[in-house]
Image (cartoon, rainbow, N blue to C red; front, side, top):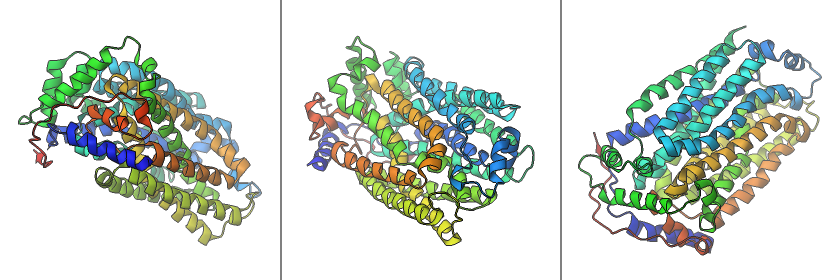
Length: 524
């Protein structure tokens, strides 16, 4: 039985591999994780700021006057008001640039380290935010978005891996989920800014784009003071620095020898291969890692969350809310998202990854089927009907429930799973591949969603509902449980899975030693 293979792997791995690892939560590891997770702020801010801008009157008057005409046309099909390839190019150019940056970042991160890669990303974001704020034409907007895409590519590739590598094994899920929490904090802040900027005629859109400078500066300054991950330092041959970094992260009283030896063994294993990381990940022994690198981001995008999040204000505008109330609706969904992610962070290391995937999949399916029915019955196929207010409120409720289901499952787990499953020798390449696939699909969806909504109408939600069924079945069958397993001992999970064991080599068990800090106490 598929589920049984995953559970067995965890029990076996934790029993041997976790011994000797400190699970102490130190001040250094907390601050380092918070600073690294702040990289999610810039991605989240970009996601939501564009959703509000694309229906903000001052922004549309400056760059898209033809959409203003459609908004004021009472005969206009509600599904097709925002169907503009230039508008979607403004939104999606960030993600296309991010794809390229992710592939480059995999090599750069391996050479210069996770922390320095985050610094590069923050620098790109600062330049892009300044260009967007000062834009006088659509070309400046798109160029600024490209710089922002480079920033997202570097931070999304390096920050989750950094979090997974420095977090104590028993709390890795919670610490890695902080990235997604900060991503949603960025979205929440963006919607608050949009709500105020929407009331400012003429230049309100500049406020929305200009506030993005602040998180870029915070990350640039803060990342200077955090240590690089021991895994990255060992990979670059800096063993003494890795030992010092590990002592800072685990605490001066912790015995770091067992963990450091496991990291060095993982690095030596990677050093035996002459081919590059991107070529090695195609080998048979990395088959489960390759499959997850492809399908986790693929299914993440096919939940429909990106388009629901990115275009939430447009969605609410479509069902009859005013521009200001549409942004307010988006703020409400942000609050729901933050609450659900907090629940996920508290649950992921207790109940496991697979349980949250299955729970979230059920919630998403119910919500998407409900939205399909309401849009089809009340807005019609031509978009010419006005949706009755009770049904419009029901759509808002379903969107909130959808966001909650996503926030406890695919939202944080999309960052947790790819960051923890790859062996050290292919970790940067695997994360780069996973994130580049995700950004490619985000580009495709942002470029096509408004046209798809115009053409398929309410069928757009049914399309995503069908995919939720497929992805939940995939998780049940093929994803083993990874909670509590040390990141450099993850091979045991795959070696005992009912299907993947035919591909991977059994991982050697490290010598068990007493866990001196098993109570997870906080050292200040």
